[in-house]
Image (cartoon, rainbow, N blue to C red; front, side):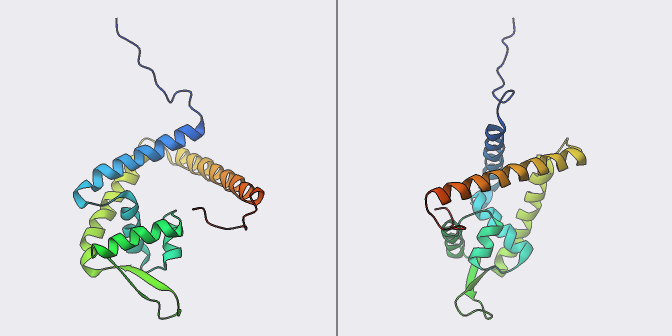
Length: 165
């Protein structure tokens, strides 16, 4: 007699499922990035800079959903590896602009292709309508959580808009 296998996700709540998706996505990214010696966070920073060009640290951190201190550590590591550079912003006295080193462009383009494959595989089997529904549902959940976070910060007496540590 064949033993029935338990599916831990069949009755899971949306929070657990969202966490499982995030965890699996990171696992896939780690596996695909191993030959490059990059972390998923470094991967996304490189892709954003390839697609958008030079950015300030704060703008970059917002694009990759990191807080500024985390983005700063990631950038510092990538600068140390010779993949990124940070130079003063000619249009702003105190800001620096972070950009890809020219030597990093071939790898960045490979990573862009890799990312496209991950994104396509992620939604394989979903119709356009299903993709729109999932996107709408996830954005609603994010807004709900942002509201809860703002409320919790207000309850703690933190100024509105302060970044989490």
